[in-house]
Length: 344
Ligand SMILES: Cc1cc2nc3c(=O)[nH]c(=O)nc-3n(C[C@H](O)[C@H](O)[C@H](O)COP(=O)(O)OP(=O)(O)OC[C@H]3O[C@@H](n4cnc5c(N)ncnc54)[C@H](O)[C@@H]3O)c2cc1C
Ligand code: FES
Image 1 (tube, rainbow, N blue to C red):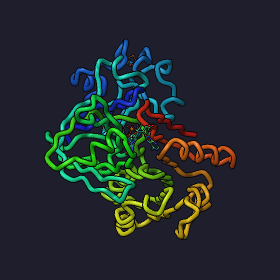
Image 2 (image 1 turned 120 degrees about the horizontal axis):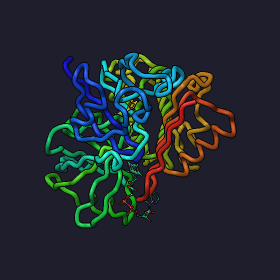
Image 3 (image 1 turned 135 degrees about the vertical axis):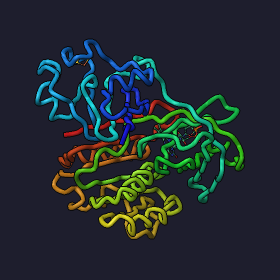
Image 4 (image 1 turned 90 degrees about the vertical axis):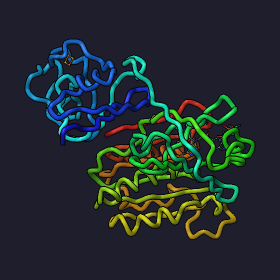
């Protein structure tokens, strides 16, 4: 391969993708793309360019000093971008904002190709992007401008990267700005999107995965599952999809299709409403099988409305559940997203 695709994920959630030629250092590739990553000496001495490599393989050479990057930091996945030469596509977390690096999120336009309502619960929105497949990491979101309103709303891709057709799973909010626009939306209408954004994305898969989705918080998991299926993943993956009412259970067929494509994938649906006759009632936390936690050797991804995300986090804290890593995203209504990740 003559070049690699490097995702630079900034502290403010903005992600920029750059091309790094074989043998090229990441700092040089970023400068070619007019992104001023933090740096000082560019010689492996100052440590100013220290970032975290979240996936991919690379060489750090031996031309830097321990003060700039210690052995422990190296084993923790920290890298010096002025030394790092990728050997594969990589994701790098940059501990500063995109604006400080004189860059910003991308913009692209798209044409509505399908608006598919699911009762009064949700809408599947499909768009054909005008300039080819947008780059994003599975789990990330974009801001979509609501035409004529001067406002935007955030939506996680439910489709996988690499497709010019992108899809979203959107909860219907009575009277909501985007929900109201979608009620009358027609194929052929144009939309402007900004992104990709967010640090809720699938990391390197090295151990079993537990996915916890609340309502339309299912969207990013559909994207992640598609990426896992395409990669032929053999890893154990368990998804628990919790909703309020029976009618809110949408795209179960799409989830079920992954059972045939991912040999170690299983899932369970859960309905909270008392009146429901669903076989599993209550909250997702009441339906986590002990083996899905794998004695803590598990990476947990959690996405949904803020009360559901907070309840799961409290349940883990109260019960001493300490997964290897825990990533979550809250679908905060029209506000700054609450996103977090922590690795034990
Ligand atoms: C990072 C991020 C990713 C997101 N991804 C998705 C996604 O993939 N799918 C998705 O459906 N949503 C997602 N959201 C939420 C989405 O951005 C909007 O907030 C939501 O769709 C409501 O937009 P609206 O214009 O229809 O309603 P608004 O005009 O924003 O809201 C109208 C009224 O309803 C209230 N309201 C808004 N949302 C809710 C709710 N869930 N429950 C009860 N009341 C509410 C508002 O506070 C307001 O009073 C995401 C949010 C964030 C921050
Ligand atoms: S810029 Fe000084 S160590 Fe990389």
